[in-house]
Image (cartoon, rainbow, N blue to C red; front, side, top):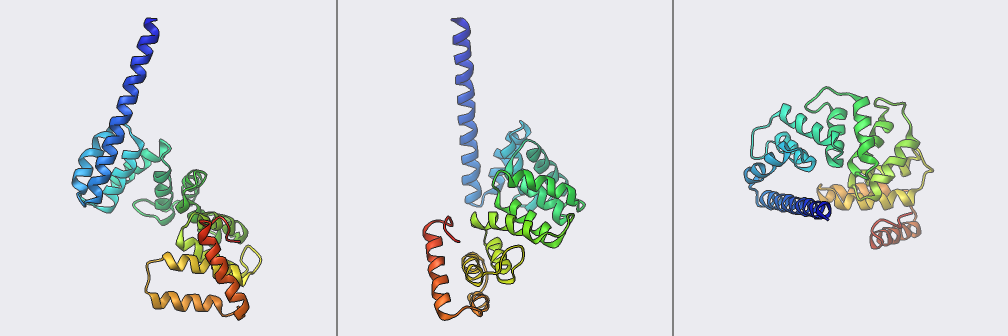
Length: 237
């Protein structure tokens, strides 16, 4: 009976600790939302030093972006890599991006693919888009439009606007998949709507995507866009 009581008390302590951590994360998030990154930093640093992966990942980003603290490449890489090694998906994607772009570290396509694959398997759209770009450009791997289209579609269906536009372009040019002007228009329209760019540029790009469509096909494509939005990207093809 004593063992059961002891086990229950340990479990209760673990629940209380997890609740406290959740409260700390909420406080850090609220501070960041208010623009008080310095307060968020004070909350996250002790958690990161205790080995909390999420706190490590967020602390690394703070050092990377120089928000509330001076930019520190060493600290950014240190905390993001520690978080990635602990399995944090966002940190794995960020680390993969850093290796892919040579940001705060030497460009390393092998490491980039390794970390992006780990994050992509956890449905992180940024990582899926990174892998797509590597196959599209032939960066560290043999150029493979079909593989690029596969990963681009995964990221696009999660709502990544750049991936949506890129997928539209691949449909338009028939790169890695069968050319389909209607689907090209659909994905381009979805992505352009969310991208932060001048409206006149969006209009020009969308008109370019619609050039090969007849008026009837354009109407069908516009209906496909509407249906895709209504189903939250589940019925876009």
